[in-house]
Image 1 (spheres, rainbow, N blue to C red):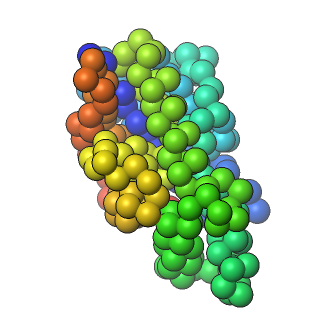
Image 2 (image 1 turned 90 degrees about the vertical axis):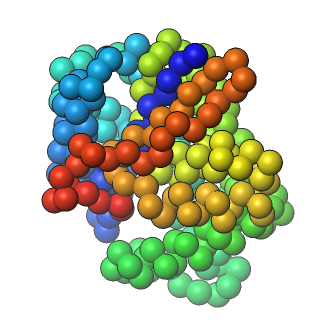
Length: 225
């Protein structure tokens, strides 16, 4: 039986020209998590992160804080987040609404939640570049691949991916988007940057042990977007 630690990336650069870059807070969140993981032990036997820059930079910050070599990590593109800009754009196209990426965080969150709710229920014919069920299937494949790595395995990915896996593991019978989407949304809206979600992988399959642990973060570093 192995344990997987699924880590959401540090705070990215909301409102910047390139979102896929850690903010100063994001870098510090990663270093603090690294120190906390080193104190908790044991050290990860394997590390994998998604192919996004914020995933790699979060791992570099964790490695710095934990005193680990950054070269320990491998990249698996299946751990990438869904393309939220494409989801927002498709929903805007369908409804005739306007996406304001410069909106304040609360207004943007409202747009995000409405758009992703439609995406998760739309099915394969909704016109989205990556249908929700394909996204969930990709996340499940990434989990299966990580479970085959030496443990404990540390994975750096995104909140949407972790939320999808948590929903699948808690409500395995709700595998399709229309049923799984509302459960996924509840997980996805509360997951903190650099939080840790633990999954046990054994002979009977994967099970969710904890979700959204973030005791390493002081209040001043706690962010959700």
